[in-house]
Image 1: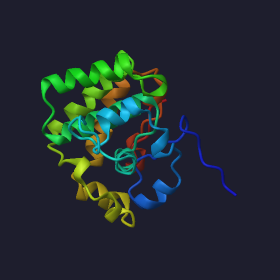
Image 2 (image 1 turned 45 degrees about the vertical axis):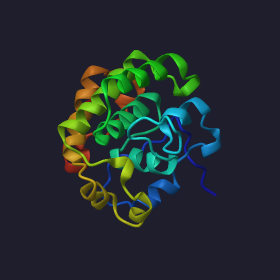
Image 3 (image 1 turned 120 degrees about the vertical axis):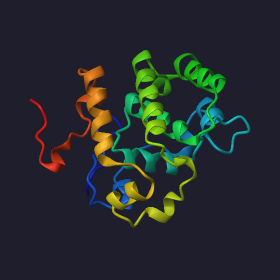
Length: 194
């Protein structure tokens, strides 16, 4: 029996050949009920006060996989930034509310540091610059049997653009655990720096 990786070690990478469903099946995580109420209040689409880009946990996990991000707070910040950025509806007051809540009200692994918020902003900027479609509205279950290269293409996520933004993130935070394990373009024959 194979053991699943822990939340702190899991990272999906950016391999185009694996199916979304295969990578999802190997993903660690908590059940929906383990997510604290204050996170569900702002980030779950069934909440009456959910912010733009709110998505269920399954869809959120699929976005992690599509973007090649693990589950450390810095990874969460990027995924949430991209997701909210693709909504097209995030106002300035909603941005301020979310950054305040994630920095001051959230607890434990859900709380963001100032550094995490930099990466949240990087995700927002990435989504807006690449004019990605609303990722929270994608029918992720319909894509489970498709290779990730096809999934990324169908939702407008360019793998080379991800490599570029991850190089920027590594330049900003070269010593962070999340940045150190971000995918390099080694899949394309370009070696990672030593």
